[in-house]
Image (cartoon, rainbow, N blue to C red):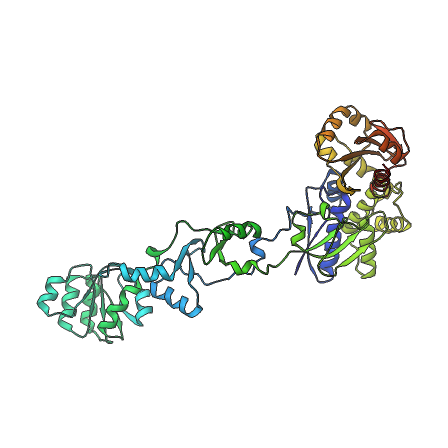
Length: 531
């Protein structure tokens, strides 16, 4: 099975680096994992990726069940040049009522049902045919004696009359069926019919065959009699003219199952064609295929709450969680592997997993693990920092070949420049939603070395924050040099005062408050409860 490994929405450096690093570990252990991200990497994460020459994870919009996750029927498709009889034979052998028709290059053309086959035989003009020599030979067990033109189109005439009548009805370009009546055969060749079908394994002389080539007359010899040949010949027609092309409902493999279900409830087709982005036919989808879909297998890193995860996470098969946050807001139908540790960064846990599985950490992965730990611990200034974080960084910096202090400050300097971001982008840059005593609370955090640029736009930040539909929203502007955060918020001043022991006012500095996990969230949770 394929594992999709991803962090939370608005991914920070830890989410990006932990998804790539855990994916590498799992692949080394023989699993099939793919690193993903629920958004574009931010500047800091992109700095780490560029520095260690690692591609960003693929962007994942959601993990909803799609048509490609369903076990739809991979049925045999026919080409428009196949015969009606061939379509009927396939339907009978496979016990199906619908067949897709595709072009020679695999593009979806339409469908054939048993109804179209029956109607084609009941209502067609029985004296005309449009098919190929190959179709006729296949359906009548015939062999080609002369082939002047593979495609056959013309009026069908059974030459079972006397010669006088034959001379009256036969015309150039006809498709003539005849037994071992050599005078009629010679006359048909002289008339330059398009195709001559001789029945009962009738043999022809070299002179007649030579004359046929000279006159452009194709000849097929079949082993059945004239009566049977006359009955079957119309079933050799191309499917081309009875393909259903209009008013079809076609699903793309990337369509979502919930949307497909809604469409099926309002329509009444037996099967629905499935195609890819290039209109290549993939299979047929029916209602029963929606009953037991194959869910996407996901591994969550750096988060464990559904509100912070991919859209459609409830439809996915949650396999594993690796995280360093509190556990909350998650339920599973089956047991899952959960690795949650009180450390400063998810990448510290993944570093430990490399050690436990005795898998060597390559330079680029060491660089990413180091970047994430330095980011989350603010180069060990965050109260979330543990000795394991520090020990991991010492070894990882050696493998990566960098000075951790110098590299960390270079990464922070590059990543904390906010000039190119809008107010909304800054607030949502590292944003998470929480439920506190029944209230919907949003907490955004941004690390920057340029505090003045934030306060120059404080009124704009307040305007946006107050326009949101959260009951309470706090933006923590964290200064890693002063080791504290400036708070801009949608909340009562007294609540902020109680939570952080400060004089509540917009832009107030909360000394020592640098961690959302250990300070912002628990302090606000307690204050909301007390209020």
